Length: 310
Length: 285
Image (tube, chains in turn brown, cyan):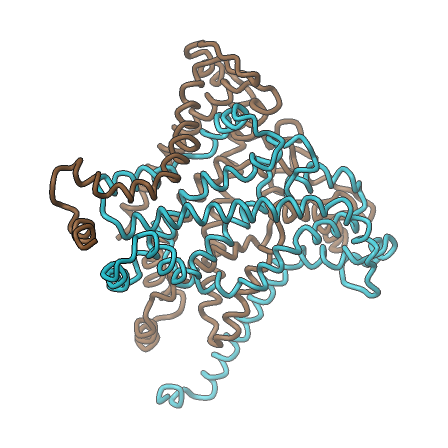
């Protein structure tokens, strides 16, 4: 027993194979994880890249067709038109997702009473109690053409006639702004908590002395808080970008990519190709193109934000 | 204290005004954030007539009838989700904790290499693996069973789980484990009888996250389950319930609220841990 303990502790004696054999128990403990990883998590992306060069359908038929899928993607008008839509949808949602929780975190941070501070945080998390799909479906009702909140507010302030019906989500001109407006005032509870965790690391003395030096709140936020929160901001920009580019929850739950193709995004096109048309090879190729794009973009974002660090 | 006293009356008034303003803005934002949720809650308790005339604010009496109407339509999804989440989360916690313990507390060749290989998977975007993962599970012949819902939680959940738990396990002082080893405890015993009991809060956090993910998942159940009696909550609400219940909003809302009951219970019980856990976290890049 003693020798095993000793060996585990310094783990450096003998050849690599001997060390591995002595540590066989560690590998045994890792076995379930390793099998899961290889079979269910490494195999699929590799298979996806492989099958992007195939005509691959639901029944499992696969036929090598070289670059045909990729050539088709760049001639596919639905795919090409979905890219500007993605950009228009992603930029405002990304900015909102990074900035709004930060403002809210600063406001709650400025609250003096610790009980109220805690209470506000609980209230901010409250929307978590409903499933995301329900949250989105509720917003569908908010935008209901005749009975919804938005239409009725517009009637109330006299912007439209009392019996006017506006199909916010069914009209190509209004659907994009409506979809971006969804979730107003866009306060993500978890994001606020993450920002607040960052703000809490700023020591009370720093804030105290900034007050004594006659530094106003906004100056302090700009000069002290923001540089300290760069790590969190970077996190939200990069994960937000990666998440938003792949997101098609809205299309799945509410718009079906419509009206027409006005809310079609590449990821939704991939979904439709795979699960409505059964073109698994083509969908895989779209996946590969998106993967390359996402990878390049997140590398660039990481680099750019890193340079801006100081 | 000195400084407070030195501030004159006018300045003091200005500070009070600013604080009041701050609270007003926060409360106003919270009101707008929570109003759609409130509207759903009171809307679900309104009669058809009541909904026509007073849907913007709560009224009495509560019409429980909506809940009676939708119960037969949603109970099945709730039961399915609870079952899937329970089995999946248990499996995820076992594999994640055992793996994280091994990475945090044992020495073996290639440790960091294997760990990096696991963590790197967090960078693979879903769009790349969605289709082939679908075909893989199709090949396994598990479509239209609970297995196709549970298995991904157990085999893919531990990627993030191992990452989350390793950091926590490494924070436990090594001397405690060393003493147990001296007394002849096996590594597995140390893991089960010492490491796990000391890690209840972080295991709870991981459990909450896993349950929430199961609750919110729409896409996977939608594409892998054709038998509607096996659907989980989110997918069930979307593909079946909304068409079944029609355009009757008060019934729709009752269904939404009923589907949220387990999450509400989880929130009431666990929001404290979540807030404290996040306050101590340092999520950044």
